[in-house]
Image (cartoon, rainbow, N blue to C red; front, side, top):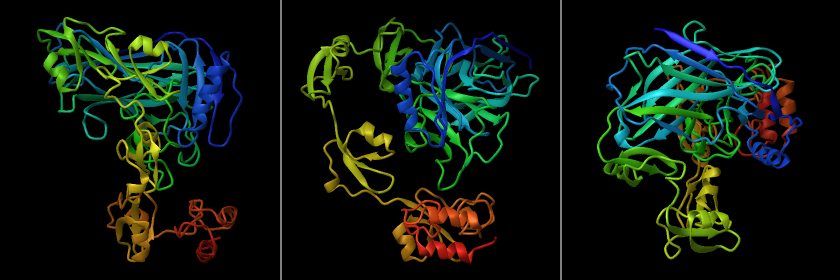
Length: 517
């Protein structure tokens, strides 16, 4: 295996904003409007991810070129046109980014890309992702891995994994201060063993970057974020989340009170956990086979070259034989529905005229006579309650399940949340809180499971423990008592040790009876 790697020189940052779970520092930015907008976005996501906003004049490139791993079985790419896919609109050479400073060791960031079936098998030529620091006080060294799947990270097949070792593949090393690097990874083009990917039926492939070891992760990341002054982190863009179902994160397990663990899309995460932008990541690929009579195929705003049949098989819009991908080819053509939020009205206009008039363009082929501009309906929330009528987008942002246009909460019965229930004999069963109480079991919270990670026959959440250990430090003492008294009368939370929905005398009795000193 051989390797080649280079890093070009960069320049100093021009602005930085730090936002953590406990504090908000000052901001220096020439564009106050942009700064305020970003601050608003960050303010609603200051939960699990501890975002940090920073702007960079130039982003250097760390290109890693290695020999193949002998895993290829896709063939040899011919003269097919190379394609670039990305969900972000960020500039990979420099600009503003949100540094996800709550990202812990062994967590992974990934993006899935749906491409025409005709693109498979394909050769993955290049992957890219921007990592950055903000006001680092030391030089940071980050051990990392690149992962490639056929399909999605959650359901697909992991085909390729390469990890940094400081010999063949360098670690990410950033100097003190605020800096970033575009980490590019590719197989030597002269090596016959390339990264070839086949279609598993989903017309999807995914790439991910994993932090294997931080420069300095001092404490449990479920309670204390890795110090932003001494670590590098993956970044998201500042323009808002565009592809909530195509951006993924594999989070560490912080229990019932943390964000969902394992591979989850941004759309499936609660608002408090979800990053507000798309990962600053992209991929370059080349189809292996080029068929005759191909043209531009638009899947949403993504464009790829495909046959008409293959384009239509993935719900794409075929632009004609011989057409090529361009910046405007996937924009709606002709006259379509144009929606105006200020009046609730609809007018048939061209795409550009609609934007110029302050409207929201409808999809290709839509007409006001049959197109619903502002759909609303009932939304079943994870708590079991119903919200609405609200839009499908607003429902998704709350992690809810949209019940359909025109539905109402008055006629909608939302399912109650379920979670692990521990019986006195250690048996575990997933059920609602009401059923758990009726059966004499201890309910562990919405979304919890009966997972048995150590294989001892008892669910992890039902193993013997100190129920009065409010802060989870392994002891029941004055700190737990102080936390409980501060939360007296609150609905739920860590101090609700018996999970009956309120912090009261029953919880106090549990803490005192479980006292360890």
